[in-house]
Image (spheres, one colour):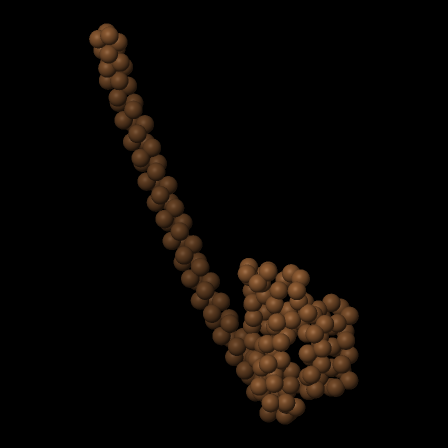
Length: 178
């Protein structure tokens, strides 16, 4: 038995430099990969922060444009109903279009859009709708938040949009949906 133990000890001693070298290489490789992962994470975070800054700037510009549009239209025309009506109607339209799966009431959303009688009405409805998130089954976000025009354009079918466009043309409302 001592003969086998000595042979094993001799093999271990002769292979020790190779084992140490392999262990060192594995350790070094793990440090390099960990460092590369941290570097990649840092770069991704920096890009995400850059994207967030640009996205915030874009959202601010969009909000300012909406406010300018609303202010300009309201200087020229008077809405047919109070602001609270348009805020409630915006919520109703959102409830009618908020899911990307079944359960939406697109026909009611189309009907709600017929309450608009002039550009001032549309401006207030658009303003109070803001940007809202559609979801799958009420849980999973579906793309980016949408404003009223995007929600109507993406949820209603061609016949429903044509109905709104015809209604608006009769009333002299300048907005059209594609």
